[in-house]
Length: 304
Image (cartoon, rainbow, N blue to C red; front, side, top):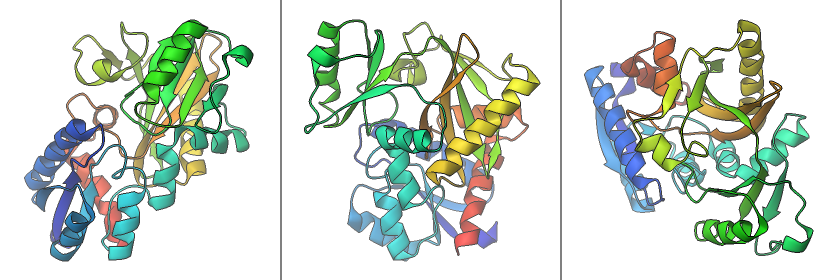
């Protein structure tokens, strides 16, 4: 444990997911301390915070969610400051945070992802020529934790949902609705952990279902055949590697009624709260939360 030196757990930030990040960071910090590591929580919100951290610490565990902390900006700064950190680098982080460009990459690699319409200040919503079948789901392109998302059933609702999403982001994704089961696949050091099936009474796995509801069901191990789960593991690793992600992360996908998988998004710094999915998948493989955070931190030794 002495090899790690002094570790900063970066958390908080300024994004809409700040409160979730604080919870993740506190849980990670305590687990590292319990493992005998000299770890300290650092609420970082500006460049000066990162410069100070780089001068006082030997490495960083990134527990920042959302823009600035998860989208490649903090990663680029830490690269320049030569401070080793957990997770994906600047380029992969920036792509993963961008739902639209992640989908373009997946499509270019021949991986399955739902059809979509892109809305931006240069590509305004054209209701007269909108051709996706309803229902659809509307998402800000650069937010996490399902913030700003709505399922809509008609053109009138669509215009309202796009306006709502644009409060969070100038770029909006209108995506084909997939009817089926929702799964998430955690990746740890290029190894796919057991899949988790998500069941909620909500229309989809939204912010409330993720962080507030006690009725959401997390099924792990799930009821998939060994062969199908193995195929999905391979798809998850392909999706992860196409984006250039590394270390750890989570790929969300749907399985429709014909067992056709559809990639939804990639999270490069998933949540690490008591409702979070990566710790749950790790536990199903016999990895405790403490062991998980140490395994993630170990990847920084290769950067030293």
